[in-house]
Length: 396
Image (cartoon, rainbow, N blue to C red):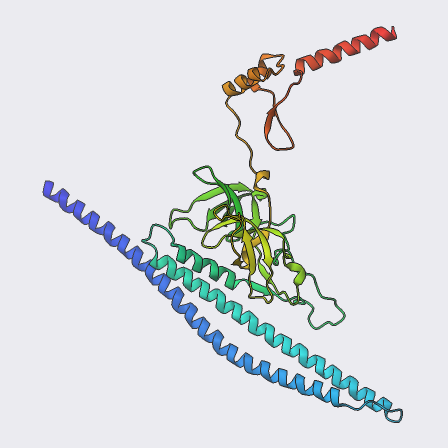
């Protein structure tokens, strides 16, 4: 009987081990499929890009030839003024059409480049999840590579994205979350959005961390976020309100066409400190010159003698408007015994037992709880009754 039980236990453990191994094998197959599919898509897109580059060069040559012919065209005289004017008008129309075609080809190529970048990000993430499943935490090198891929994959906003060749329309302004442009007041984050979240760590420190939205509550004012640098399969989740979230940019601003969407030099910002996943206070030293460039940021750092760090390059994606963390820090409520002791020490005029127990605290403009001297509600009510009686006696 005992032998039978041992055999059954052995068979059950064997089945469980085989099932776990089959699950691991299936996940490995899925990861391999994702990588192979994305690599095939990248190859197809690169072949299409080669054709697009040839077409772009042809459009450029055509536009250049037309503009050169316009420059070499003779100034119309009085005898053939109408003919030359009509010819010049036709040439200008043709030149503008060629320029628009060239712009369309550039945009098509840029969209395909963005797709290639996104596929590369997916391959890197799949490889990381497959190879680092046994690691206890993400290495600094791995985190730096992940952040670099995230910033690299961010699209660039050039402007005039929706004008559709209508020359009468003016340049449209950059949308919210383009570079330094903040989110709209009614903006709602979605699952998967990268944000800067103000959280309190296990050791009591409060920091702005790089996180990802895991879920959105029904009222859309509360979010569950997960630290981007959390341990695999042990993500540190936080439940925070909307006011403790800063959405990260969803486009990089092109400095040549959208300079207004960049932080000016000497602006105080929150920026991601290199080799970390936390945002710290810094000052913009220099701004990007082209879309792929980074900000040069000087951070406040007490570890340096000057109190400031040297210049660090920080991508546009990880530079947001500065918010004072003291605005979000609320001192904890003191225990009732300590509050009573504080009241007695400061000789606060507590006229009733309830006021004595609660300690007469209130919020001041410094956002720190402070004990104040004030009459109780009972005394205020009695004073009002006495004043009413006095007024009635005066009228009589």
